[in-house]
Length: 170
Image 1 (tube, one colour):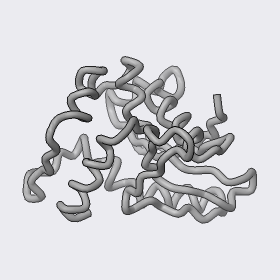
Image 2 (tube, one colour):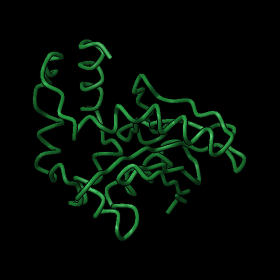
Image 3 (tube, helix red, strand yellow):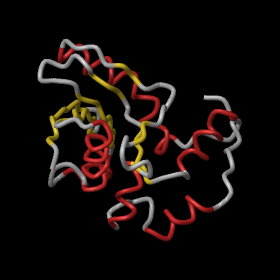
Image 4 (cartoon, helix red, strand yellow):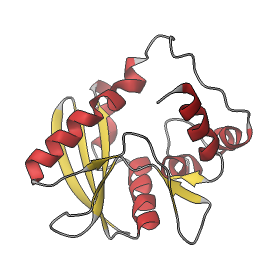
């Protein structure tokens, strides 16, 4: 994504509440709460320097996403349309709600669905001890709401062990 595309994407994200914003609204996000969310929606947007050092903890998931899509496709015998351009999808009735799905699977044997990808290492794996972390569960529910799907696939790595689960609309 070019700097201009990233800026446009960040500005579009300010126009509504995305799936990853729900954890902040509910107070379960490691990235902050409602105050930080409010500031992210109302403050001027800046794009980080493309030559800045890469923060591996923050970028690990982005770099592993294509591999995770490929593994999911192989394990399930389906084609995933990977959202490499980070296209936003807006709710057809409630236009303040949007998501940026990691992938869509229109020909899944159980019906059209999407794919969310997550990765965690070390201490980050502990938040998965009781199941899907609340912030990710809320994000997936928003995806189903925007697309009108009854299920959404979740593929995730915990300390480089691949796992997957089907999440149902709640």
